[in-house]
Image (cartoon, rainbow, N blue to C red):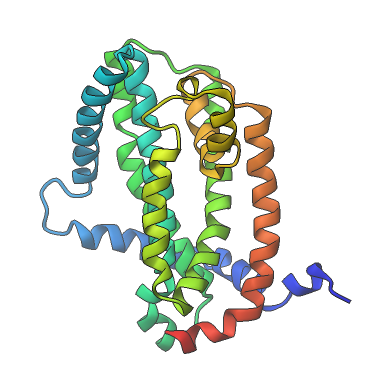
Length: 269
């Protein structure tokens, strides 16, 4: 008889737990990735922050004018949205090739495969940490105060990373076997950028369209539980429920998937 609990035991769970237990591996590798990318640069990783400021300034000026939105409301929402979306796309796009880019290590060194997923997560959290510096400056410029709801963003960020973890593990396995899927997923993320309320707001949609674009868009719920608390807005119960259910069901299915195909990954590299 099919038993999902038994299916998720053994190698998949052991691999994941060993990766977390040896946290010094993924933290060191992730930090080295960022340090290597900006070695000998005077500004270093803060180039990421500068690039983000330029992009937000241009998008804010163009779309703020087109939508005739109050700049003190539009720009903070746009800024947080782009920073969070940058984290999501970085995790998904780089997660697709996490096993492929680490193939030399996987073929020569015996370590948990999930270490390479955690390495990508840690690297993108460091990059987001650099970009988040923009927010206090923006809040000071527009005389906004951080409200108590902002602490919910930490819980939202944790749920976002947990959900990204199973998505990255699933896409990394599939993309290692079928390399063309990497381009398809990365293109899909570009389309989803426009289908998610980052530049535009939920209030701009009509009711039926909003139901299709938002309630069936998992990235909208992941964005809302991080962005809304920072803007002093409580995410809806639907946002929390969808993200929690996605985390539970997603990890259960992916662990079964990982347990079945884990040994084949080195042969696909």
